Length: 118
Image (cartoon, rainbow, N blue to C red; front, side, top):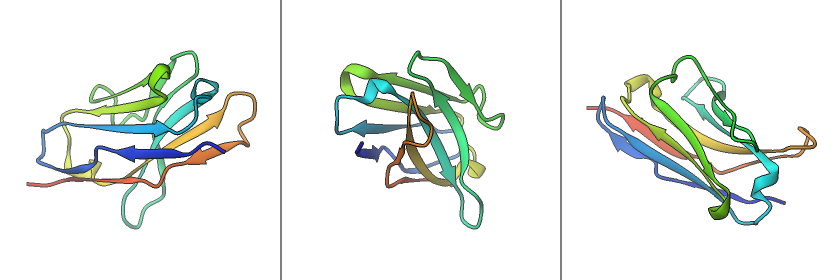
């Protein structure tokens, strides 16, 4: 079992920045690909960004150039730096871990609310 705890959400004005963190309670973090998803009210949960165990990254088109995913295996933590935030970025953001040897083994955090509004 891999427990994930997100933090860093909140209310920010359009054009502002936030950094989300997702900390794993176990030191096997380095064996997991890490994702950030988000879900707006009434919409499906969508992938925002992924970082693999080797550090390769990819992003949803809607956030390319504005968001950056990174990981610190020594701290068992993955981050999502979000810049130039827009109202459409408002959602609950979830951290997901996928075991590198089996995509069927996945874990989710509880989510953190991000609200972009003036």
